[in-house]
Image (cartoon, rainbow, N blue to C red; front, side, top):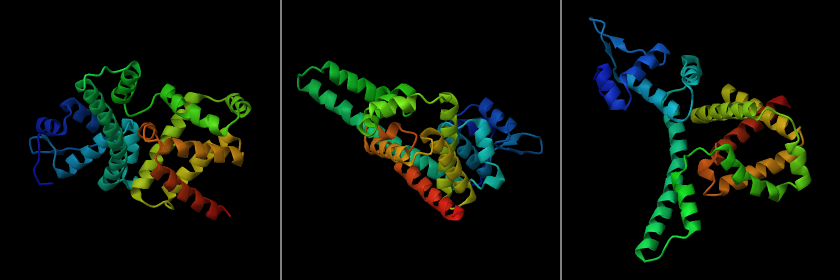
Length: 259
């Protein structure tokens, strides 16, 4: 980046945000604009890079409080780490958009050939081209129920469903640990303290669901692997094979340290 400095209006325009948003980020301690002799705010290379990090993490679904925590100096999250996280997410979105674009083109080709779109065509087109990248709980259920039926008997499924837990609270904990996994993976070291901490929390969540039953844990891993291998489902999932593999390395390192 050049050494240019921008006024709040210029910075907001270049970044596609409002000046009100810039003031909010400043109030939350996320960015500190420089001040002129007349006490005017200005945004230089350092501030613009910082704002990119804030906006990129916000786009990934993180709250401002969580972003502030991640961007603390002692967390070591640099611009390149944030770019690595963006790359992971955008790769998944690219696959989803490519699939949706292929469906739209096929539908147009059918119409140009004088054919009508069937109800099934329209249903698929609507579902696959208008959905957001993040699956809703109902969509997650639609993805996983058929796969789970391959690995769990109806009796096993009923037994797992009968376990009492707060779904909202558990989902929030999983979202947090997956966020932490992405951050640790962006830094690149599966044996780092942050990555090992992710492994501990991950294992705890898995054990809570499986009751420590390794056979159930293996089936759950198989279900996730099948879902991630499905080109239609994969872009909608909160996990990717890369995250799975990274956490697996951290879990192996954690186990080695505990033996």
